[in-house]
Image 1 (spheres, rainbow, N blue to C red):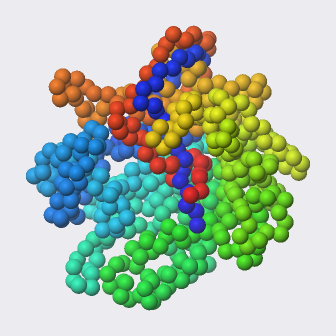
Image 2: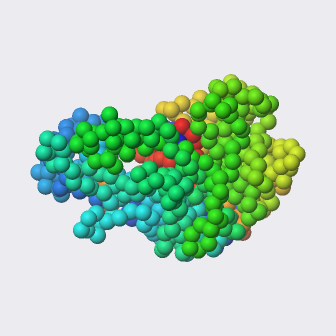
Image 3: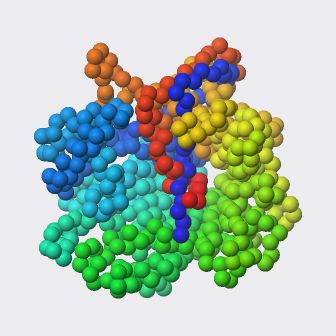
Length: 596
């Protein structure tokens, strides 16, 4: 049962920051993120044709279906605003209650409606908000980014999408195949309770399902997991879970899929005395709603390798586990594949023993997740000395067999992640995990991708203060060249006058173009996408947002910016994008998952 969060982006912006930096005009920034339906955009992958897969969040003009609210709901929205507006950045108390109750709220009041719906996320009686949007840029030019529909549908008898889906566009191949995973939309279903009350429940068919598109998003082909096969009894098919996290040019696809249902979940679903099969339960909630309440811990998932053609999968197989548990050990043993190369060598992570020499595990043997290589039908761990290095992940691999990722270890008494690269061609010998120096000794860093030139990109901490949930360290994207062993802050490649701060690098293609996410100050817009003006001066207000960008190499030279100071100010809770996937961060995002 995978409880994974897609790790898109974790930002640390100090309240006031002043640093001196040396920049370089070696790369230009092409903003791929400007699109009028979402506030924030995040780069996922860019192919050799400069086409980019992008994720977006924070929808403008969310399509609230006001006809499903009653007077009590409106009362609760007004009460919520009255209780919280003094502590919520950039929002006022309800501005026009009459218009709100008529279903035509102001932008400020629409924001409170969305907050109210989010507060009711656990109840099937309220409309659901997805808001993570799949996007693409197929021209390489700024201004040409557009969204595309994966599994969403229009509300009944309308031309309006529900926007209740969570869609992760995880990458795009050199041939323009887009892939990822997305959820089914929540659709309103009328229901009469045992006391005669008529209510509406919001239900969906599955939580997340793999998809690919051989024509860059125009045609969506879904990949059902084994738990939805025809060989499974129809009354035990509840949607399942699957995702494609990477596709090679040879059309090998890897990711995960549900392969079985936990027996405890089956027992609950079929229980006629308190479970989903109980007639008394079904008198008051639909069967699908009961399933939605049980589905979070229902599925056992495994790493899957599919072979694809333009019509769908031609074969599928599980990639195996790292260890064999005690026969009486009832825990789920996770194995996930994050990336694959053209030779069919995949990398990811899997549960292994804390004692790497263990051959006769006990029923509760101590375990941890470790980066692994899937090759020739075998699964191997390359994290040395599990007492010192642990909780590792492999996120990418190139066609030369060099894999990258991060591993956790203690540095000066604090737990940190350190990026690594490893040569998987030594699969039958000793695969040495090489951990280069990064921003500084106590910096946490993660490698996200590697190209065929042996250049790695990722991100790491650039601040040295003691980090905490309330004061995380600020991060910058980096580049590391394996051949020259040179580590560089990607911001050092920009002109001194650049308005962008590169905070995360997700991918690098073979032209050394980098898919990254950047912080930039832009005009502030309200929840309807309209400009926000200062109430006193009438001037346009601005705010910091995250944008998907391409860093494109140019024939420039290092610029000396040592005298330039960059000041990043955080106004209250203004940096709302920190909560995106918060994780993703359900990794966002391409290939980056963390086990809960």
